[in-house]
Image (cartoon, rainbow, N blue to C red; front, side, top):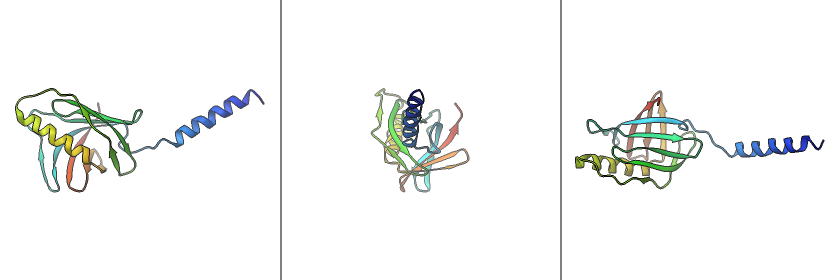
Length: 139
């Protein structure tokens, strides 16, 4: 019986750890922003720019490229709610100035997101006012 005790204890520890893990439909997914704005007044990105977002399950960190700079933040999600912690980003400068303004709008909107919805390959992030619309990436 003594040889089974360590195995049993290990099984209990793993089960306890797994029970604390939550799974969300956005975990381990990658997205590209296609539109952002408020309510029904969304607009596409500046031509030639790309904003990407990845939700990593292992470390509970979202990360991406905001058009010029890379960013990351801790997050928690369940079936429809999303809590994003403080966003950190690199501080490169890109031209033209409109790219930096677009990036600032995106990061500000992302920091306010509280809910999400996935419809096929479209992710909508919102706080009830702002809207970010992203398409699934398979990278």
